[in-house]
Structure formats: C-alpha cells, structure tokens
Length: 634
Image (cartoon, rainbow, N blue to C red; front, side, top):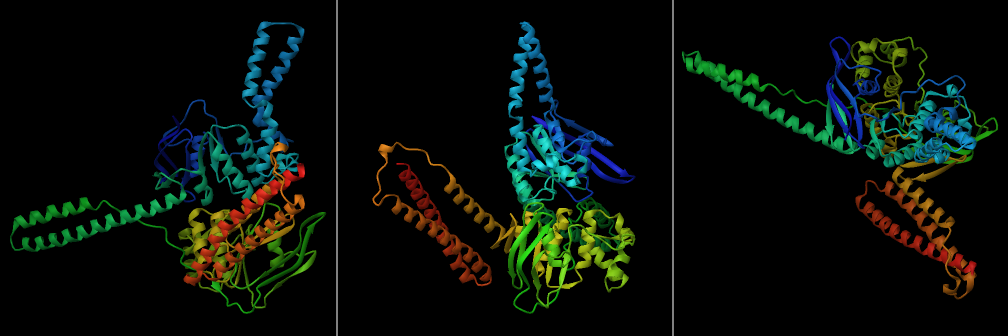
C-alpha cells in the first residue's frame, strides 16, 4: 500500500530559479526513507507541501486516506499558560473525550437500565481499552524518560522553553499520538546521545512510515532503508542506508565519468576524421564534403552527456604551532557549581601532546562549562587548570558571536586576519562563500553559515590545541565533511564536544564521559568505549538479577559451605576486573603501535584471545554467584 505519492513537483520562489523541477517519490507503508540534499535543495519545502503549508507550482502530493501525518519541525501554538504536561496531554485528546463520555454514560446507567446506553458504554469501553486508555500514563512516562523530559520540565510553561526543548516536547507528543506517518526534520539536532539512541530504538519498533531529513549520518545508517537525494530538483534514489548511498553514489559517479570520457574520445576521433574529409573536400571532392557534414551532425548529437562533477574538497587546513613539553593540559581537583547545584567536583585529568579527546555527556551535565573553564571564560570554585607554556588554543564555540555583525564577510576577514582583499575572497570561496555572498552582512547569515565563517577565520590561526563545541550541529553533510577533512590533517591536540557519533567515532582516541558530577576517563575509540560500557552494564545486571528459586531438595551441598563459595565468587570478580583492565591497556597499546604493523597484529591477537577469555570468566562468575545465592537460601 502506498502511503506517500509525490509526482512531478515543481517549485520556484524566484523567477527562473527552480528549487524542485519534476521531483517524484513513492513511499510504501512502513518504509524508512532518508531525504538528502544540500541546504537550500528543497527538502523542507517538500515537507511543507506534504503538510499543506506550501502549494506546488506543478505536480501533485497524495497521502493515503485516513493516515495521520505528523511533522517534527512544525510546533503548534498552544493556549497561554499551557505547561509541558498540558502539551503532552493533547496527544491523548481522543482518549480524554472517551473518558468524559464514559463518565456521562455511567451516570445514566445509575438512573436506569437503558439497553442503548449499555451498548454504547460497552462499545466505548472496548475502544478506550484498545486505544491504550488504561496505559496512557505508563506510555507517557516511558517516552518522557527516553527523551530526557523529567518531572521538573513537565511542570514548566511551554512558552518558556527554548526552541530545542520545544522540538523535543513536540517529538514526544507525536510519538504518544501514534502517528501513522512521521516526517522528521533534523530530529537529533536537540537530543543528547542517550535520547538519540532511545529514538532510534523507538523507530525500530514503530509500525508506521518514516521520512527523515537528517545530517546525522549515524542516525541515517541506523534508521533509513532507502535514500532519496535531491539533485537538480529531481530525486535520485538509492536502495540502502547512508553507508550504501555513499558507496553507490561514488560508483555511479565513476560510471558516468567513464561514459563521458569514452564519448569524448569517440568525439575527438570523429572530429579528426571530419577535419580530414574537409581537407579532401577542398580538392573538389564533393562526396567527402557531404560525409564531413554528416559526421559533424553526428558529433553534435553525441554531445549529450555533461561532465559529471563532484563537490570540491576543502582547499585549506588548520595552521599548526609546534608543541613543546610533556603536558598540554592538567586538571587538578576541579570543582564548579551554580547556586546549590554542583556540576562536577574532584576532576583530575592529564593530557599529553597529540591526543584527540571527545567530551561526552547528557545535555545540562556541564560540558560547555568545562570548556569555558579551560578557555578561562569561567572561574572554578576550586582546583586548577594548567595549560602548557607553548599551548595556543583555537576555539569554535557552540553559539557563534561576532563583535561587528554589521560588517560584510570580506571586511570581517580583513579586520580579523592579516590578508589582502583577494586572499580574503579566496579563503571565503574555499568555504563556499562566493560571488555576491561575500558582501552580505554577517548578521544575515544562518547559524550554519556563521559556523562556516568562524571556521574559515580559524583556519589561518597557528594553534596546537583545537577546541570544538558541537562543531557539526548546524551544518549539512557536505560542510561536516569539510570540517572532517581539516581535522583529519590537523596533528595537534583536539578536544571536542559533540553528539555526532559519526564524527566521534572518526576522531576520538580518548573519551571523557561527564555524568553524575564525575568524568570517566577512557583511553580508546568511541566504539571501544561503547563496548566497555555494555560489559559494565552486563556485569551490573548479572549482580542484581534475581535467580529463579529451585526446589531445596534438588540442591547439592557444596563442600566448604558458603564461605568457600564467597571466596570463589570474589576470585572470579577479581579475574573479570583484571581482564577488563588489560583490555583497556591493549586499546592504548594499539593506538601507540598504529604505525608498527607487526606489533599491531600481536596486540590484536592478544585482545581477541582476552575477549574470549573474558566471556568465559563472565560465565564462570555468574555460575558461582548463582550457586552462592542458592546456598544462602538453603
């Protein structure tokens, strides 16, 4: 069954500049489709056409009859004074209406036995139960917990929330409504890692149809099964997730390039032949002249394939300052509070040269505050931060600020950098600020464009500690890849806050997880950190999981009683902990041996052996723990 049918959509907002030029897309029930394209390609316009906010100049939009459609970026206006809880409760409006009618019917039944009233009551009760009326509060709590909407936030006025918080509440409301078709416009932009992973898990179970605009490549890989990219106003389709799309797009490009080069070689050959025939025709050979004319017409018919193009790679890189010394950064007994709330305390960290560190944690845990402390923009309550004497910081903040937003881009570069007008324009062009764009005022730029401009200015600085606070948050995929190219070539220290798991996985060689006022310092990649946390969670669950009771008469008595068992359980726990510590050490050794292939092979072999041994140790520990529990119960 078809849920969404978009046929021949055409839209232009400026005369002669078509955003959509015959865009067509069919989405079947239950499909997960990612809608990709550069900023300004028309993605949000398509969503607005589907919700009736914008009419196409040509073409049709069809949504399956009876299907409920919800758009994440569209935040309804609620009555003044509505709290977050009131907004969430609007998802249950049909249930509340049924509940009110059931109360009226119950009052009528108390006055007499009207068969019609009884029949209506029975029918409505069944509908109320089928609609989840008795589980509404449980569902609401599950969704709110998953998206980090605590009790305190639920009592706040909706109008007092930030744009990101409103988006999160709206996402929760749509989930609670059991919408049939979800249109997700950058759903992960205002979610932390835990909430994003919860959303991915929810979408895996969601029975409806999903069409998602997202620059979160990890999210696209996890959620979508098909990609539609807007290219020159039309849809280019790919039957797979984001990783498949990247590979297939490159394959198609190479195939088109090969076809173009083959055609050009054939054209060159025919042009040479036609030129030869014209030379013969000058000697009075009319037949050769006619053949030359026919061949030139054939050549013109062959000139149908445009040369395929690719987005140019970043044409510049970070300037680097040489690092001298043993320590780039030392944090000692650091504490920071706001009022009665302590963000973190007793933080001790040490950073050597060349490390790449991801600072992670839920929203509100204090990541940006920690960065500001390093930058000297905030003062700690106690403790200290030491920067090596040769350290020079380059900083890209989450919220970009310019001292003179009334200046145009060229003047901004000239005043901030020691360069000529031509150099300023060349650097701006490398970041896709071309033509008349360079004469725009900075205040007229979008958030993503301001991030791009600040990054352009930062590229010329000679630095050896690069600090990025949510560097990819407002950028499209192309812009994210530009940053990644620059960071990849940068050899100094890197400290970054990000929710972009693709970026984290690519660059982090060390993870600082800020939670519960402390920082877990893990030496290894993000993937290794996730595996470490999963092992911790498994061990925690194994310790707390109740074992099923067994008949006492069937339980064999173990020699030595519970004391012997307790010793064996403690020994098993120590063995598990020792193996986990060694795994962490191997992760560090693998990083240090990155350029030594033979040593790296030995490290990988030991890590594989140790992982198998750890799985066996987990099993042995769980068996002994179960026997100890049984012995204590006998």
